[in-house]
Length: 340
Image 1 (cartoon, rainbow, N blue to C red):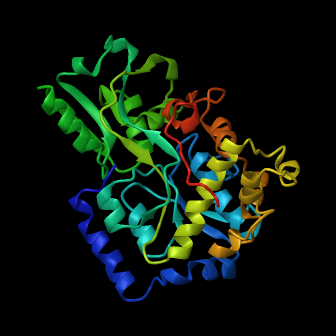
Image 2: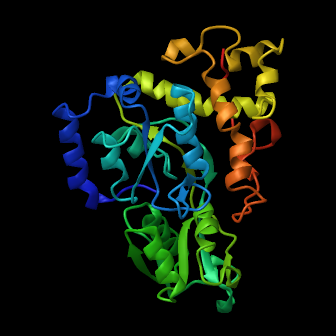
């Protein structure tokens, strides 16, 4: 999803703030250490990715990345504070310095990479889809001629929908809201025939409907949505810390290192495992961290598979198979640069 021209003013203000020296990007690690926590921008509530419970405890795949960064820096995964953000204001919060990292189901695009910050990698490969009530009797998006379509404003979702309907010579009416919960409520109340967003988002929001089993996600995928965390431009050390935290979780899965065996694996004679866990070499110190930063991440948060299965996997309410989010060695797209 990408912003529209309606964000021009907020973007200009954010750029102005940076130019005026409000954000000293090259001091992020020192500033984070000084305050004692990572300020992480997340969604306003998306089950499986970033969602608070009744006591305000946040969980999810994106939340786990925030916790992993805290574990890498402080050896304490709880040293995080969360800032819930709408799609419309998320980039302003990042560029203005309100948050240290944005981990909020955000699609990596060229314009965002140029305008707002450095993407650290992909933590979920997704694509835009459609959900409809089963009572409509629709089995394909090609049967949606004349439909009212609910979606989030301030994203590329509206543009993708326009492209899809135009390309297939179908008419439609868009019904857009700023907040995701507003979209869910409108769809659940029957104000539109179709709900469109990333397919993982559809699986998550479906759990909030009054009768989830009365709705079906259609088979068409109309876009590429590589989702990932990002940080501000201008601080290469902070970029490295975020990027290698994500790589650490993926490399740990590939090497068979998990929460249960990480202490035992630290004594392994395998050179790759020793480098990943910092029992050999000084990779952590090269980016301002303890050499055991990855061991601390895995011990506190787990490897990528553990986080995936805990939050969005087949045994959760979202019931999402790994699919293209499997490791490259298992037929998926997940591939991390080596720690050496």
